[in-house]
Image 1 (cartoon, rainbow, N blue to C red):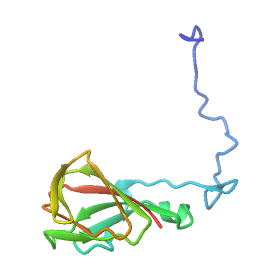
Image 2 (image 1 turned 60 degrees about the vertical axis):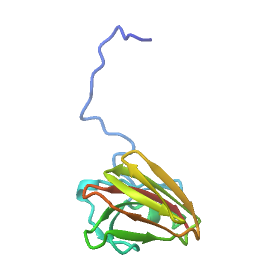
Image 3 (image 1 turned 60 degrees about the horizontal axis):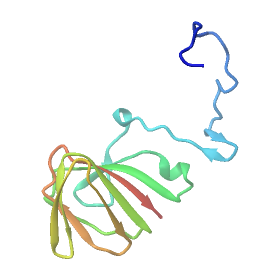
Length: 139
């Protein structure tokens, strides 16, 4: 019941049944991944002008989907983004940018999101230095 009328204690020496996770982190066919942003490497992305930080979801999902964080590399003021994937969901984690689709532009700030189906060309520009975009894409 709540509130508890007894003391709750921690046993730091108790061995748990899952203290040794399976090497590929596979649990009954389900694979898990742990992404630590501070330890992840920034690498070139498929988009000229953006760097990518992979989360490991691509491998964990068997290539079905991918999750990455994107940031500007400082080389371009406009980034052409097309998608050959089934879908692309992007969430603006930090900063700001301007989204251009079919000649229409809209300024977006942290907390905004946009989804583009495959084959819809669009671009982003005026990315702030602190811009971070979470990209969730299906293959």
